[in-house]
Image 1: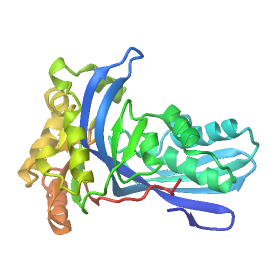
Image 2 (image 1 turned 120 degrees about the horizontal axis):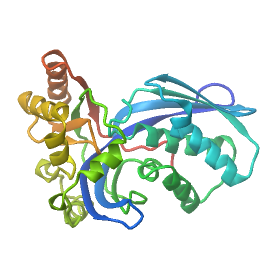
Image 3 (image 1 turned 180 degrees about the horizontal axis):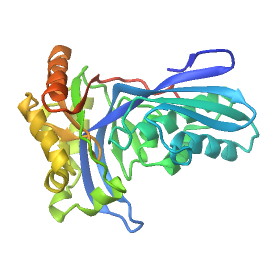
Image 4 (image 1 turned 60 degrees about the vertical axis):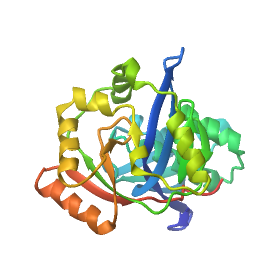
Length: 296
């Protein structure tokens, strides 16, 4: 939800996400991969505030990227070019979500900036136009325009809202590892056996939309095997999650974050402390949320 923070400014939370399922179905001729995925926004978030200004600029705090690598500023530039206007903005992003973690922080920031600037600049883009702009920024950006629970296809640009899952608690840990060109590398390591039909995600969409639950045993991520086999730090994070009581941990996106569903906030908090104190991992507690930056 957009909020007025100070005069001539708007602010919003840019929520992170996890993939409850992530199925890779085919490799496309253009080098991208087709996926079927159930994605859920979670309460961990960056904070985005935008002011009117004469030019376009970005200020960051928390986890900091090189400005030219930040999708938030690219989103603003793209929107201004598309709208053929000369408006400016000062964008401030406080990054709480770890960088390149699989939680979608950069993509969520970009979607949030698009939504805020449409409001701040008085633009009336239709859903197709803003979704197209979002898709050109990154595969996860279209999902973050609305957030909540969604069934996602294609390379991520086809997003279908789902019935909300019940309130769910998660514990997450982020192993200390840097994988160069992470997403491309992880896709390149997939073997034929890692590809699936996408049927699991379709089944879950039908089940949840029909009023059914989301059984924990339905969680799936095509990158789990690759990550555990190839990267010791990620394998150790899976081991630590199992050791503290997470029954079925999985990667978030292409990792390296590992998450699990937990019965309550109290249980999640206890597991978080164990992961931090006993295993030396960055660990977080989050719950499912169902708001994007604004309604479009």
